[in-house]
Structures are given as structure tokens and as C-alpha cells.
Amino acid sequence: MASESSRSDDREARLARLRQIPRTPVLIVGGGINGISTFRELALQGIPVVMVEKGDWCQAASGALSRMIHGGLRYLETGEFSLVKESVRERDRLLKNAPHYVAPLRTTVPIDSWGGGLLNAGKRFLRLTEKPSRRGALVIKTGLTLYDAWSRRFGNMPKHQLHNQPQTRQRWPGFADWVKCSAAYYDAWIAAPERLGFELIEDAERAEPAALALNYLSVEQCDGEKITLRDTLRGETFSLKAHVVVNATGAWIDRLNGTLSESLPERKLIGGTKGSHLILHCPALLQMLDGEMVYYENQEGRVCIMFPWYGNVLVGSTDIRVDNPDDVVCEKDEQSYILDSLRFVFPHLTIKEEDVLYTFSGVRPLPASHAASNGSISRNHSLVLLPPLAGRDFTTLCLVGGKWTTFRQFGEEAADRVLKLLGEQRKVSTADLAIGGGRDFPSATRKPGWLKALSSEYGVSQTRVSQLVSRYGTRAQAVMNFMRLQPDHPLHAQPDWSQNELRFLIRHEQVQTLEDLLVRRTPLAISGQLTLPLMAEVNALLAEDRGWSPEKSAQHLTDTLSRLAALHGLGRLYPVEMNKESCHVSQSESEA
Image (cartoon, one colour):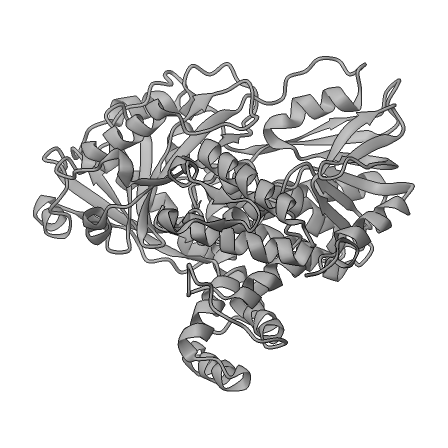
């Protein structure tokens, strides 16, 4: 077992580097996708930027997305053409730059009429109403025609198709009787958003060794000149000065601004809404979806989604205003709302409460708004500059709004604004720059031969190589290099994963907690695979690498179980008896 002082992760080295930084040109606060994107953009220009995150990377809203990379078809109705155009362009860039995680997704829209919704669509476009309503085929076709035009300009997605009732029934026999026709088009989905976020960080630090990213480091206070950071794991504090502070804290933007300057005039920038999703075990629905997404309107005209997810079905979402973004969860009434919406489209399905394997929820960092309808609040992004003033020596740049699909564009705009403040010029564009394991990713025709060559080189079965490539892209080679350094064994509780594979993640991906590993570095939690024996086994690997005592290891597992029960509806894992000396599950609970 490794001693505490010889732990294999690099957090101590990172903290030591931070102690040596009295001043940084740029401090980014917030390690969600927009902060990470800005960090990458600046590092690629040679800026020694520092980024801190009070939790783990992509822990909040950036880890609670619908897993879609999409153009935002419904934003056409409110006249946000530039946002849709930008989103389609960035979607197609991600398909090229991150092919290991982002893939096309055929999407079907069930429709209840041919001409319905024309009047209300016109009113919404002219801002005469914010009331959602159901949309007919002509309204949807108009939007999809524009979608196609931009898709053909920036990529090569197939054109949309409109299907009449017999055609729709043939493909979707389980649809409700109200469905009279349907439209089919292509968007995209992302298999591992949190992993992509970490790969962006890794790419940035490789490009600029002086750049530094640290998770579990919060902003404690500011005296107007020095900013005090606190290690939330151990309590140590650090002080540094910054020329520019980028506030990328999403739903916490207003709170951080208050911490940075008590004399700052009160100005509310964020009016976030909560979005919750469910992961369902429903083989009948999974079979009907057959690899496609259904993008549908519920009874009140709110847009919802469902599509296959790691052998289960992802369904969402809600849109509820919240004042406190801390530890939001999917409430029981939200769960009922989502399931009722699903039954509106597939009324013959029987879905029980125990079929909900996992829930997740996050707060969209939308701009403050007095809109009567949450759905009418813009999903576009903006930059708000707070110049130095009495009692605050630095400039603050606030990143307001945004959506996952457009993170690169938002990060580019933020970085360009910072570069101007620093008197620097852009040197590198990220528009066509591959990300992480998407670098040198083979085409579909080359991939079989490449997998076969990797299998031969590393002495690993082609099935296992294919599995690792699906998880890490071309970074699978680094994983396999590490895995063969010492004898490896499959996990007892989940043989599709091995001990050395998880050790690689622990040692090379800033994993600090069991939750980091289960929820964000792997899909073990969101795919519904968690069992108590699996959690205990993975926790033992983490404890061994960190040199934790049996007591600390047992407490960490208990705390993680409690958090997963509270945040993700995994209470079925919690009420069990554990041997706290060994962190093993008693035999009677092995099937919990």
C-alpha cells in the first residue's frame, strides 16, 4: 500500500507549483465546460493561466446536460437564428474534433397535426406570447429546412424527412393515437462529456506547461488585491494576485462576484433554471427506440427527449427556476412529471418507480430574466466585463449563459477578450483542432485494421481493445501502456473493467474522490451499473493508491454512498451493513 507521502497522483506537485505563483495574468474560477474551454484557449496562446474549481471538473451543470450536442431546433421559434447557426456549426466541429465521444444521432419528432401551431409560432417569433404550444408538421418542416441548409454548409448530415401516418406507424407502432405524422432529422450526442472536459484540460497543460488547473480549490475571500484560495480537501490556503479574473462559475456567478468585491454594485447576472433527467431500465422502450432519439412535446408543449443510453434510456427534462444552486436534486414531482411526459408519447408502456436507475440534475446558468416562461429565456451566451474599481484592483470577466454545444465558441470569445486586456494576440485557432482521444482517430474504413494492429502490439484481445477505444479514443494506447506495467485483473464485481485501467484514471486524471471516478471519469454510475460490491472494490483501489487507513477508507465509502443516494437517487445502495475495517460488503448484502 502506498504511503500518504508517496501517493501516485500529482496533486501535491500541483499545490507546490501554486505556492510559487504570487501573481498570474489570468485566474479562471469555475471548472465547468465554459471555464475549461477558456482555459484551453488561453493556454494554447501561451498564457500561463491558472484555473481552480471548488469541486471536480464538470461536476455541476456541465455534468448534468441532456447528453445532446445539438443545434437547438426550438430556438428558431424565438428568432435566435444566429444561435442555431452557431450551434449547428459547433456541433459539426465536435463531430470532427471529438469523434471518439460525439456521434450522429437520428432523431424522430412525433407530430399531432399538419398545420397546427402556426398562429402561436408566429406570436412567439414576434414576442407577442411566451406560452408554449404544440407544433404542427408545417412549423417543424420550416425549422428543419433551415437546419438542413446550415448542416449542409458546415457538415454532411442527411436531410430531414417527413413521414405520413402509415409510415410513422410502421416505424413507431407504440406511439400514442394522437401522433398523425413525424419528422426525422439528425443531431448528435456525446457519450462522455465529463471526460471530454478533462481531455481539454490535459491538452491545454500539454500545450502550455506553465498553465495550471486544480480541482477542489475554492475562492475563500479577497481583500481587493490578493485572492485567497482554500484546498477543500485539506484546508490549506493560498494567496495570489491576478490581472484578470474570469468568473466561469455558472449559477454561482453572482455569489462569486460578491466574494471578490463587497463594494461591487448589486447586479444580478444569473437567473438559472433546474433541469432534471432520469435513466430508465425499460427493455421494451429501448427496443422501440432502436438507436434513435425521440424529440417530443408533452401535454403542455414543452420539449422533452428520450434516447438509448448504455443499454438503458435517458429521459428528460424539467425547467424550474431555482434561487439556490447548491446540491440540486431531481425531486419526486419532477420524476413523476418526466414519466407522465413519456407516457404521453408511449401510453402502453408500464414503467415502475424501481425502473428509475439513476437521476441527475443541474442548474442552467441562464441570464437573469423576467420572462414569464422559462423556455423563452435565451440559451445564448454573453460576456460581462467588470472593470477595476475602488477596493478591487483586477478586472473581472463574467461568462453568462451558454450551452454545451457551443463551449468552444464561447471559450474563444472569452479568451479573445482576455487577450485584448493583456495586450496579447491570438496565435492558434481551435476551430479544427482535435481534442484528446479524438486526435488521429481513424475513419470508419481504417478503424478495423487499426484495432487489429493495436491488439497485436499490446497483446490484448480485439474485443478489449475496441472497448478501451470506445472509452478513451486514441488515448487508449496510453491506458494500455500503463496496464501492462504490472499484472492486471478484471474487477470481480464488473469484469468489463480492470484494476489497472482504474489505477490509470486515479493516477493520471486528478481523481480525488470515489465519486469523481464513478460519476465523471467513468460511466459506471450513470449507466446504472453500480452495486455496493463494485463500489467497495473500486474504493479499495483508490484507498490503496492514496495510502488511506482502513478507517478513512470505510468513512469515504460511507460518505460517497450517502451523496449518491441524495444526489442521484441511489438509495438502494445505501441501507446496508459494511465491515468498516475492510470496506468489504457482507455476503448477505452482495446482491444489494
